Amino acid sequence: MDLQDRLQKAIEEHGVPGASVAVWRDGRLYEAAAGVVNRNTGVAATTDSVFQVGSTTKVWTAALVMQLADEGLVELDSPVGEYLPDFAHGAVTVRQLLMHSAGFDGDLFEDTGRGDDCLDKYLEYLRGAGRVHEPGEIFSYCNAGYCVLGALVARLRGVSWEQAMRGHLFGPLGVTHAALLGEEAVYFRAAVGHVGPDNAVYSEWLMPRSNAPAGATMSLALRELVAFGRTLAAGGVAPDGTRVLSQESVAAMLTPQIDVPGGGAPLAEKWGLGVELFGWGAFGHDGNTPGQSTFWRIVPGSDFVIAMTGNGGSFAGLVADVAMPVIEEATGLTVPSPRVPPREPAAVDGAPYEGGYRGPQYGYEVAAAENGLDVTLLPGPLMESMGATRTTRRYVHFDGESFISAEPEDGRYDSITFVLRDGRATYLHNGRAVARA
Image (cartoon, rainbow, N blue to C red; front, top):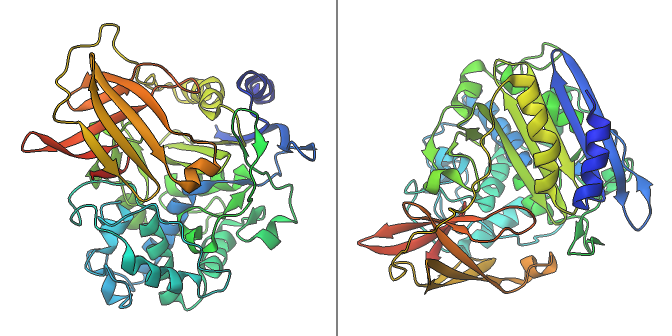
């Protein structure tokens, strides 16, 4: 495979400071890295470099929960409050947390300190979390829910989430190139994020420890993500033959649990227990931290896994030029092309969609416009720190209650879907349900 050449050309074309890719194909591991882990230092990226893998961490946290289910310590359809009596939203079930339908505000990144009690403090903080929808009503991506699952793991194991991760997954999988805390990352070539049009080094390398189970801290060499993907594809058996999860638990993780409004865009069409399920034949997850992005796909029955990460620039371009061709060449599958707007947008009545929508990290203002909607993004402090600004974009009708941006940004078109009740939109959905203000 010409991974190295492809990756080098792609980072140059798409302005990505550094990237790494690992592919398991036909019984062999292929790896490549290009660019730098940090533009300020010029340290080269290598296949041993650890990149922040963001929300791919959620699948690891889900696996820790499923191990508890295997041992009879957790019942997926039981209220979380049975295990975490100090959790204010304890009526939601473990399954609803795993499949992102718990219903409370999800983008809450409160820093509750570096101590081993940070998740307990985070549970207390969630007493103030607002209700977005009723539990189980709709899919709405929920970072906070995975912090609760991390607290569940820590409480029932009697250790920190990090200790549970090392003892119950990293150890059995033979993971060697991984960091869960900043003081561990110094032992590796650790990538930093780059943000904005000039790819400036992001000001804070590590997000709060309280959000670690959702993806705030885990850094990996990508071969470790490939090994975990192979384990899931093998029904819970690690590459060395160690059983990490029961076959029943892996099957449950990979069974569709809930549909994503709008056919999934920008996420997968369906969700399992912690896992994105793509209609074209793969499962996996994507991940983002400020200035770092990760792509991870497993194709069951094909002995194929790919993981790729980049630390700035247009990661979407990197995926299109490197990951997608490799998937199609290796598996024979056809990966659907990204959505594009129709050549002649249809007229649409914008009245049902007009108004304000507010979430904890950002908001939207929607106004009717010719052949579509004008949608204004109102970024909060976290998004502003990553380079987001107040912007208005035209969206045209795509299908049903879904709209797509008329012009691309960073090489791709964005999609949004509205959820209507009684002829009026109650949610703007972009992977998360953002309630009408």
